[in-house]
Image (cartoon, rainbow, N blue to C red):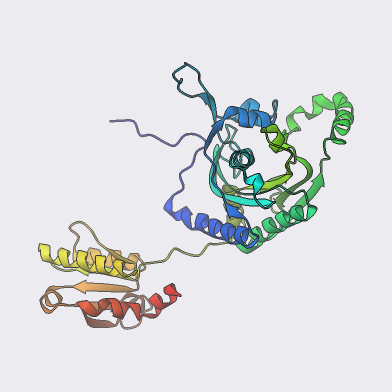
Length: 379
């Protein structure tokens, strides 16, 4: 018997039952980012390793331990380019900003990315996996502190519109190129005698941050939901002119985990309005059923049917389990008379007398579109 494969450690399938959370996060992120004037950008999953070596900082955990890097196939001259699966989103966005001359546009250029996979070879923690996805925003080309405030407000609105509470923001400044080096030396002198006690507690992040930095955390478990800040020198590291910039990356998996902790439930997926059930075993019953299903779907009516050789009882059970509002019944009389019987499944579920109506096949679309459930879904 062949081996049954499983997902790699730190990688996760996103199953259909999880999708309503993802769709909710994506919808709110898009609405909020658009409201604040950010436009969507997508950058490649693979970049030259040098993009991250220069920007993240040699000696950081990302570069030393976490990047998935490999040599590409050799070109005609035998040269190989070292490539890296994207560990974070900002460097690629700044590279695209420079490569495509976006510095010639009205500044600041405000962009967001959504549901983009990031890869880090780290020990999986709560809400973190080796392939995780982010919602992020970047504003490039202007150092006005009002942009800092705008981005923090955007992120706050994102969590608030998701329905999350007990969210706290921490804001600080880590200095600039003038004061930061002196401060770092003082900090090293202070901690040098204490290194034996602090090495396991030190967390090294990205080197490119300067001035404003911020982080949103949950008061429930104190875990960080995101991280962000200014990176005014990053464009220069990537070969461009001095360009102020600020951005953040918010993990979608971590956000969904917080939604579950706070019992924030996304809207349920839309259930089918109709479920077609046929009672005969001859081919014409299924042919009519398939035709009706196709017609209803063509007219934007969500419809399902049973497949395979299922009994009428099994089909009705499946219709009830689907949550459909109506069963479209096709039996001998319906087939001969060119009509269908529409059965109200929800009335049956409420314990009231089930309503059945005979509807001509050519009038079925108009009948179903006139139902309250369909009118509501179209609004």
